[in-house]
Amino acid sequence: MTSLSQANEQRSAKRHKTESIKDAFNAVEAWERLIGYSKTGYASISDDDKDFVLKSFGVFDRPATPEQFMIRVRIAGGALTFHQASVLADVAKRFGRDYIDLTTRQQVELRYVSIEDLPEALSALESVGLTSYQTGVDNFRNILLDPLDGLAVDNIIPAKTIMEQIQSIFLKNPDWITTLPRKFNIGINGSFSNRCNIFGQDFALSLAQKEGEYGFNLYLGGRVGSLAHDADMFVTPSKAVAVFEAVATLFKTYGFRDNRNKNRLKFLIEAVGMSEFRNAIEAHLGLVMPKAGESLTRLEGGDHYGKIALNDGTFALYAAVPSGVFSGTDLFHAAHIAQSQGGALRLTIEQNLIITGISNETKALKSPLFAKYPNRPSPYMANLIACAGSEHCPFGVIPGKPDAIDMGEYLSRIVPIEDAKVRLYWSACIKGCGVHGAGDLGFVGCKVPRNGKTVLGVDIFIGGTLSGEGGEGHLLLKGIVLEEAREFVAEFMREYRDLRMAKESFEHFIRRLQIRYSNYAIGFLMRWNRFMTLQSLEAMLHFNLKSHGGSHKECDEIYAYGLSLVQSITGSKAYEVEDPFLEGKKPFIFDAKTLDKRYLPYKEIIEKMLLPNPIQRYQVFTEIVNDIEKVLHESE
Image (cartoon, one colour):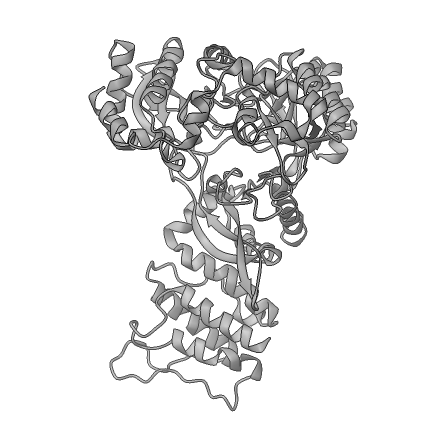
């Protein structure tokens, strides 16, 4: 443990002020104080309690709704009985304006709960085995499972029992309530398909096989903006709990407590190296663990839309809940379906709902639930994630949820597509609660200068994945005005619609595309085509990925596109000689007298694409975009 001790000592010179609050924290007293506030009122709550202590029990003060609280309810593995769902729905209706958010950790958030109603609301949840304990700040958060754990036809190791054993170690245990250096996310996936963002967790057990035995490979250190890394350790189901306890103890003992932005498990592992951390796990266990086995998790999560066949011969029905905006009334309808069919409810990381145990599909689909939340939605609405946004979160820059839904509905109308999987993930700020880095396209709220004013916008990311390969998404477009973002995305979706292979997911299409084209080229397509559409020039000036470029040399791709532009506009080739790079050759110049005046603003831009010397030619697509924006702004 020497290296862990040394790393800890190097970062222990200054402890964050939050650690003093945690040192004085007593879970029993804090809970009694929380309940007592219902009698003494909102004004009696200290700032420390608002900012930290109450969050230990999943109760969040929200400035946007003064004197009303959000309750984050732990739904272990995302599984709810119909009775639990009914009580949860009743609490939302009675105390929370009938509003519910489904979250990316398979949980539920209730809002608008007044301080005087907190004890009754929390008591009602506890009466059916639900709790808000440890769903905020420096705690073990809700454990993620495959939403079809134990039921999916590709589920090899049902993980519910392991989850319950791990949860019993820390849940409501004073030794573990708010005593970690930072929050800690856990995931267990015993299926071939990754339906639970398994590689985005601090501690992840993912299905693997070694020497004919099924078990898990261990991955550690995932967080927003960084996937978990392979710990090169094969863990059998019987060892899973002990390995978790070892990792948790090491993190609690040696984790950093100075800079809260760099206190997650990831940073401790980076400080000592994964190999050394693995050795520390073995030392704690007192045994040598086998090296990692063959990973059996597929590159993409399995689709689970419509009617889903289960391994017990029954079916499940999927309901798309765009951005997780739900209600108590909706949950009542879902609970009624589950009760009438002898099933239960499962929540997904993409803020959707699955009802299991379906024996009479026709009867179930007549429920008001499926009139509101389609069983077979548009691909743009099926995997649509958005965090709480500025309406409910003090960190949110943009509304988020309504923006995500607006874009999904717009794309469904403008670029309809079938048999596709498209993951659009929205974070209202850089904190990334909408897991934007894992989306096919991710959106992060920002502010953008426009005509001397500051307006709301988004940065757009591309190429995220839920698999352990490929990593997080990369910045594609920066500072897009929020109201215009959907138009940029529509340009890319047209390429997906026209160029994809049969039933190819958007994630696979992007991977295939990035072999031939850079993100600069893709970003150029989105900007250029939208600009040309605004000028009613799209017919001749449309940029199509299939027709241009693919050489990996962007100056050549631009040159190829420039040649096609000239031929489209003038009906003739730009150069009469065959070799465009012939030394001494004069660059092509448009004849402004005969050129259609609509193209005059872009004359110099197109000519620069065609300069014979590649060094003088546009080197990256973004240079052209910047010049186009200047032309557009000058014409306003």
